[in-house]
Length: 104
Image 1 (tube, rainbow, N blue to C red):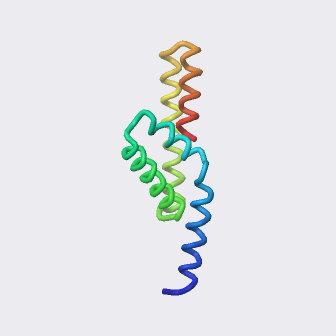
Image 2 (image 1 turned 135 degrees about the vertical axis):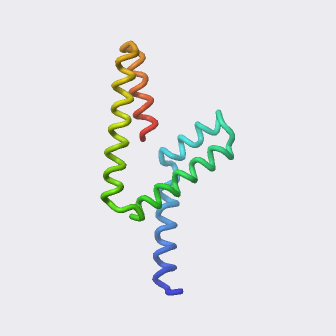
């Protein structure tokens, strides 16, 4: 193979490994593994990482991804409105907090 392939592969691998150490995904995985099986949390985190890598590598066209993001935001917004109608104010603040934490 071409030397530029190896250079690009090793550069992206090293940057991603360094940036993933100590980020919020790592903390969430550690916290979740206290409650759930470590293997299950690992597989879920790796699946999410693979999915996000595929999306960021532009396998899905910008138009399709844009529509998917808009649909996702509309669904989450609709869910929050529906929950707001059915719960008290204090509980709703907790729901918003959980939604924001899960989103990020």
